[in-house]
Image (cartoon, rainbow, N blue to C red; front, side, top):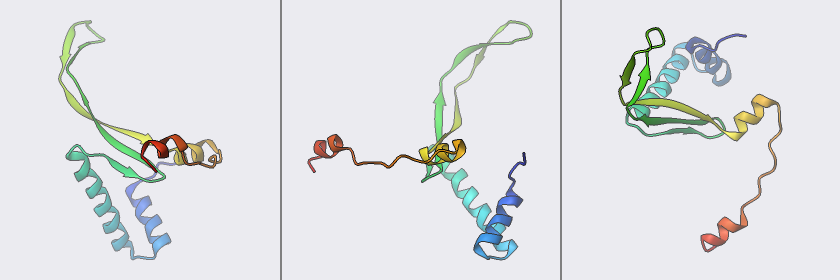
Length: 112
């Protein structure tokens, strides 16, 4: 199994889009920088058909040092999570997506 790297992504952009290697690398860096900037503000990043990157706030809690057993406070912090889309989950599992039908109840509730 091979790990996908920045250079691998830049190369894929170069091959698929036809930009120069430098332009492909710059495009990739611009996209990654934009994603990081939005996540820093606490907002979510949703890439349709791929998934959603979310920032979750975790509260303070008591942890335990596994070596000594001493209780230690774990400070509140923000953590990055990723929720894959149904499309990505289906691709990973080799499934085909079921045809989606509009939800009649939801349409009625909105007055449509």
